[in-house]
Length: 326
Image (tube, rainbow, N blue to C red; front, side, top):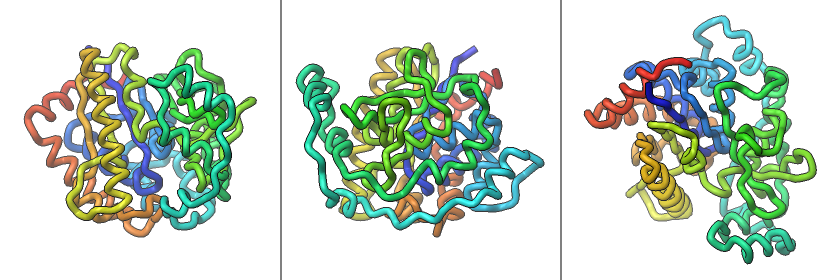
């Protein structure tokens, strides 16, 4: 029986809607229940989606919750989350964040650049130096704190964040990684630098795992998997326009291609879902906006369905579905 991994990338509230549409299609059309994956890797928005899956929430209810529609059943956990008050967020404008003042790099960041230059990412390092944001992501995730279980989920849930001290990626939930309550690990993974305040866990503060990579799929290289399904809201080539968002998508696409190659070198096959022109047109430039989430889910469901209907993709998804719940 194949072992299957699921990677859920970052992308804010809009990215969560993209996850919901793709996962609902996979379950409805191909019988792949994302909750059955042997390992789920979540980054930023993907850490929220992944945690809800591990708490037993279905793809159908993920989609309903995202757009504040009626839930499918009597899931008390999801109803509690849906009924909880979530503070409104200001519009997200990446270029405004980049204009915020920078602090000087500390010795740990410099030391890491000198000792391990092959692991050093200048852009990621620069993001750790941004002045802290004004929004509190822990407050945004208060409902998650109330429903989380005292132990880490099983099967595996790996949540990616970046340690602000030295720009190093930390994967909460992976063996030998720092321990953390789930809601704080998720908050750390979602703490977009310059927009949200860093999240303190133990002796360190952490920021968004997307600073290292919007997907972080390569962390699954040694997980003993046969197949990995990747849902990446922030990548995807586009011909719509030429601006900052397009540049960011190309960068995310570049990182993801490297990660897919790293998995392939270990004999791990992959299926990648990323938004094309139609999905990007409704996703817009503000990843925190709730204005068009219905359309995002609809477009991602339909377009992902078209891609999944390709014979070579259908075969891989059939293998993922046949692996079944553990």
